[in-house]
Amino acid sequence: MPRKAYGWKSGAPPEIAPHSLAKHRILREYIEQYLEVVTVNPAMDSVRITLVDGFAGGGEYVDPRTSTLHPGSPLILLDAVRASEARINLKRTKPLKIDGRYFFIEKDPTVATYLREVLRKRGDAPETNAQISVLEGAFEDRLDPIIASIKSRGRAGRAIFLLDQYGYTGVPMRSLQRIFSELPKAEVFLTLAVGWMTAYLPTAGVAAERLGIRPEVMKRLAALTEADFDVADPLRRPDLLAIQQLLHYASTTEVGSTYYTPFFIISRESNRPYWFLHMANSARAHDVVKELHWKIENNFTHYGSAGLSMLGYDPAEDPEVTGQMAFDFNDAARARTRASLIQDIPRRLNSKFSAGVKFGNLVEATCNETPATRALVAEVVRELCMQGDVEKRGGEGERRAITTLPLGDDLVRVARQGILRF
Image 1 (tube, helix red, strand yellow):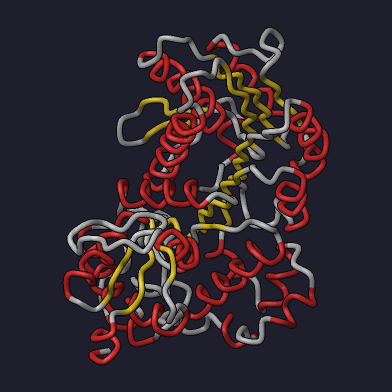
Image 2: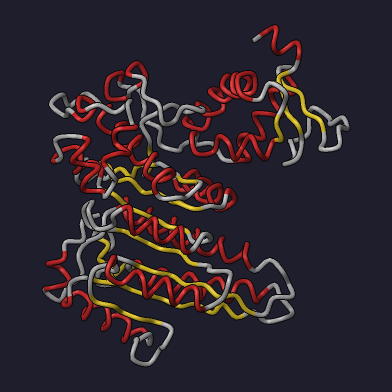
């Protein structure tokens, strides 16, 4: 959401919108689940992680619905780690220490001062807590020493970057390239105001330039034309799909992350979408984020199909044209996703994996292009096996009951009768 810096600069916190509350909930719950996963080994006695908030803001908001203070992202990061450590230790006989290092970057000195005061009141003043740093300046200017600090803490290089920028020019692609080239195990949450981009940037080339995407990359994106960014007709959505496709290529080819979640935050206040992107090289991390989208629902959407063509655009299915419901991660969307996958998975197996493919590899090959979680894909594969359209065998070739969910190393393929029916 726009930070409304005048609130913090005037000495008062700005209001927070419902869609930002949902975004904060995803951030907190994800960090807690992330730490559950990396501390699963009962022999561990400590784990190091660095959390970087590149556009920290003043650290607190007012919820206009309740008139109560709501923590900003720096406080959410701190609280999520502490809550995780406490909960993890309830189940362990050997105590575990989560060694967190925090970098909160804020460009505006007045807002940075406000944040320091918020932290001081909580007992987290950077002057007395060496694990917390509030840094003034631009994120890009602070990135290299932060990367050096993360690398100095050990080979694991565990780090989560929150880049919840105001606008769309604060995080050039070269900064993301630096993160993933130097820290392969890092993960990034990135917000981009794509609605403002399509409203105020006249061409795809201008959008790419503002994002720091090289011109030669744009030349390779033959499917994107300047016409795709025409926003004269308010009923057209190809402008958003063009941005989505552009960021798809930028997030993989340009940046170097393997998995990402191309979902939009719907702001009911501005009526313009924000792209809330999680980028990582871990398929498991990718799946956890999608599970959280389904759990929270109704604040996130995308403009493609429900099956394996999420990044494609079909005007016949555009909710702005047809009046149909948008994809909002609710029960109706889950039913649509299941129905689409029933059709799409046999097609994909037949066209790309005619000899069969391990279920885990199928999920990894398709997860960027579907809103479905691994669990939902497994349910659909089981249903297809029960229908006789798909068959599965164990990793050693053994028969597997059609009523069981597929395991990661199970070989799945279109059944012979399924090919004929298909």
